[in-house]
Amino acid sequence: MEADPAVVNLSAFETFFSERRPFFTEGRRFFEGNGPAYFYSRRIGGAPRSDLADGTFNDIPRTSSILGAARMTGRFASGASLGALAAVTDDERVRTFDPAGGFGSRPAAPVTAYGVVRAQQEVGKGGSTVGVSATGVRRWIDDEDPLSPFFNRNAIAGGADWVLRFGGGNYELSGHLGGSRVEGDSMAIARVQRSSARYYQRPDADYVDFDPSRTSLAGYAAAVTMAKRGGKHWTWQVWGDVRSPGFELNDAGRLGQADQIYTGILGTYQQNEPQGIFREYWLQAEADAAINYGGARTFSFFRADANFTLRNYWWTALTAWVDHRGLSDKLTRGGPLMQTPGDYTGIVEIGNNLQGKVRVSGRLYYGDYEDGGLIYRISGGITVRPGPRWQFSIFPNYLRVNDTQQYVATRTGGPAATFGNRYIFATIEQSTLLAQFRLAYAFTPDLTLELYAEPFASSGRYRDFGELAAPRTREMRRYGTDGTTIETDADGNQTVTADGETFTLSNGDFLVRSFRSNAVLRWEWRPGSTLFLVWQQDRFSDEVSRSLVGPRELWDAFGAAGNNILMVKASYWLSVGR
Image 1 (tube, rainbow, N blue to C red):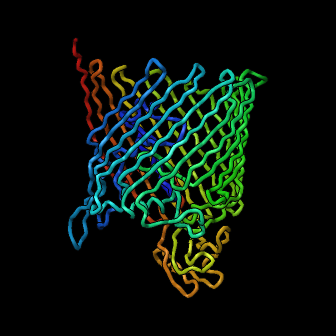
Image 2: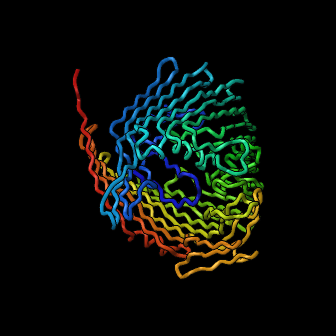
């Protein structure tokens, strides 16, 4: 029903979206375990790589064609459950056009087979479980294939996980142990080593070695958690989690960061019986910290939460969060460690009865960084259900970010202190405004209409360019000072002179608009037989701009260029007698 939300991703990490296809959402719980995300179903049929296109104009397929897929799920009387899935996607090509060479095409994705299996067994009568998961990906690529430098040829991953409950179900010991291995052309494995999940090429990382001749990479992950889940008032949990630098899941699964040793502790006090003006409330405190395998503390924080529900079912949630300084191994995107500033964050939420005919909520998020950065978000929504036939909701959202450590580029020719490179950063002022609309109306129990729409606008403007002065600090050598110069041309490009060298930074200011919507008319014209009529819009525009977004930019998203897609789907239920 809903399209993927629009996002502007300025990080080095992939954006992960929730699954919406019924084939993969049905029976999803049979593939979920207490461990890493070995299976991320959006990999199957996902968009081919857009960075393989090299024409002036590129027509990139939005998805890879699924030639076939099969799923089996079920439970046994013994308390065991099984989920198995297999799928094959077709090869894809990008159509290109270049004024010098005319129309052409080039490969964008190979034929790929996916296999996923998970088995789980209930142990005893207290809800304890033991499970195993495994995934495999095979791509049909030979050594001469132009795609061999870009895709792993084989990838396997999996492991065991457990949840053991005891003490009348009040206590729980859970954890997981697993591993992964990827194989392929040396250039493909080099891409895995250099990816944002691990950055083997970091010049100050003495515990991993970037080896361009590798044709495989393996790693492991493990975790254990001890928790008190039951009790009248007090619950707690303490955990440890490790992911080795070579751990890799992004062929069939989902992994944002490897190379991490993560620990944390959480305590909660809850009152579930009415007391004074409160129907219920809970208070919670949490402390977390992580280091990489080189011993650098990448982050640590303390967080306190409180949630109160009044007797009239109005509720409020409060959060206070303190991030301590850390040493990021990701900010320089393959460069040395860089210090991150401490910050203070506060969140306030409020809402009324979740079962009411009119539901309202509001949320204010504010973060203040010690180096002058800030972030605040104002969001909320209202849902109206005046009768059993229809429901309408709107959820607006406004975000402002002032990030003083926005990565821009890496240039050679830098000082010896930064290993001969320049790691260039800037302050970015970003603003985002969006709104999500939903409408559901039932003409009859068999004829329904659902609408979803999301206008979106986001802008960013860069200033205060500079380069990292020394590893393990956040000190910047600002261009225009310390013997350097910076000039802006009419197109907004920056020309920098430093240490006798001159280079240009392209104008990165942006303003993007997007409008995505779905309208679905569903008619079950006979029991089990259904007709769907779908109208989908996907509009997008972008331009160079230094303006912050406002209601006008959001309104302009409705008029952006894009596609209108009309689809009809029919299913017919066949009754076959014995």
